[in-house]
Image (cartoon, rainbow, N blue to C red):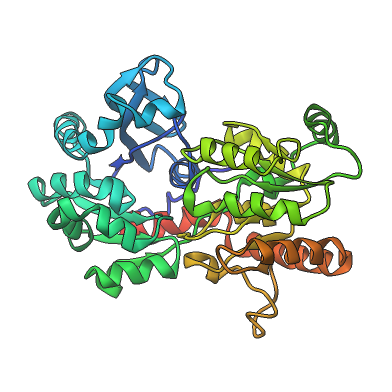
Length: 415
């Protein structure tokens, strides 16, 4: 992974400073948005752009200021020693998200006096747009970038933001540049009053470890043994956060209609974990559903490599990093075409004019998941052809080197 050399095309006079607003960051809860920040900033030389980031602390053992990769991280908010995931939704830590909306711009103002930022960058409108625009309103000369990475349904997001609607609306209209990771989210920006000329569609990328083929056979065998995977076992896998929109419950409901050697490997954690475990117990599937808990992003590729089919029948998606990483790992993918997924999940039956990249199912349809799994298991040549096409698509259109280059040239240089 190389930093982009922009010495000949640098439009800035000297090193510029950008402050990122993000509710979470490493090593706390990591999703596609946080991964995107790190993958992009790691590829831009510190001698070109100096990145700072303002985020919630949560864990009191974490320092208030820390350098991670090419980003100087500043942490604020309430904290406890080594809180568990469920603790984040309980008092007092559940106050952090609303507090961030107003503590973050105050802290940003203090940091700006010290570091003199040239721009602020909000990671997602619903979580960081409000504090970024509050800062922008009091510092009108500072440029403001908004990235749309939202995976929740848009109507749900807008309903949630009603108490702060005036500020939320201006989080869009006050942006000097809006980067959307899909045309689906770009259309949302237009609906919220952003001009076409201010919008750049720049996709996310697949996990670099999946593209680089860096996992050894020894590592794969060791993980299979630790999980007890037998040669006859088929592992369905999902490596996305355990939240409602990922529809892991539909996959669990599909299992009783599949052979007993088909298992479901759920990698990661999230607020739906207890519900999913209760559903597993209710359906008497404890021996066929495997919960790994939180796994470091650098290790997730191994879990895809030991699996046979990636299944995530999302109810809503902004784009879907996990799907791209699964395709990079040569896994057949079963997915819906909700939201941004429709831009790269193509099925011959639903998209006769596109080259097939996956098995598309309707949301909330365990029966269609069953049919797709059986089709994959009985058509190895078809699987080989489709997974090869999907891998080529990811290599061409969804790699982080390209994303970072586009962000540098089309966003950071043009604010």
